[in-house]
Length: 317
Image (cartoon, rainbow, N blue to C red; front, side, top):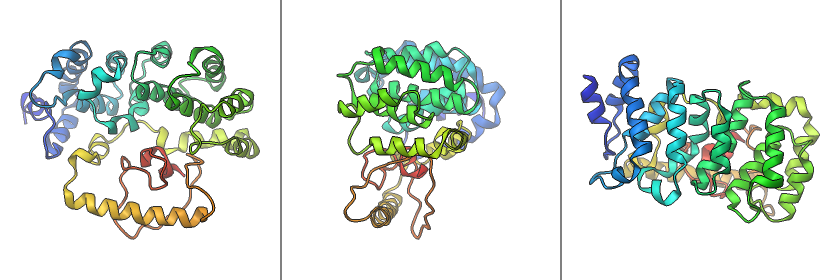
């Protein structure tokens, strides 16, 4: 395929997954990277125009994943610029699935300027899911040595005490409390407790008991898990990530996935006990599971009932 043919095959969302076009794009990384950057830059500056397309424009989604896989730092600023737009503006141009990976996309293209992520987090006009993904991306940067734990703990303290609206979206507070805890919560314990006590964290998501569990494990153990967490790795397989998206599934495959979710849900319920409400207590401790049916996709609803994507919840438990 020529570069023009590849780009044409990736311009719109089609019912069938564009595996060949994506594989060709990866094979022609050097030649196609400038074109992918143009797509991201154009998309960030022309959201309203793209919303008027007769078919659903999708080139920017493919470009984000490909550039993340290529670790292309020139994509960092335009990707953040795109997601700095309000939810109602970008909604027609994104699928919910992308927010399960957005923190990893941010981290994969990170160019060293942490102020852009902080600016997105503090931008009250931006999409809440994108802002929470930016919080999660900071933890990924700590895991891979791009930021220090001490600096991020200090920044998270400013979010707790001033920079996040305490009447704002719970999604942001969920992310802040969880990622503060995953960085070992000793210094921020008071802030975390106050947020939980004030009802800023969803009940099913995390309790003070969960935070105490991290403390009991010790700092070395908790921090040692960060880099091995599958929710904190870089984007390395665009095709593998995107082919699981709900919009590309056949009805037959979806039925098999639904059956697998039901089986795993029963398994989790049995483990947790009938008297305990299922919820995602941890992201980074592993419970072996022997699968008898089709694999639950990383982008499927988590069987535990949290309402979160499986890859952001019990996949990492």
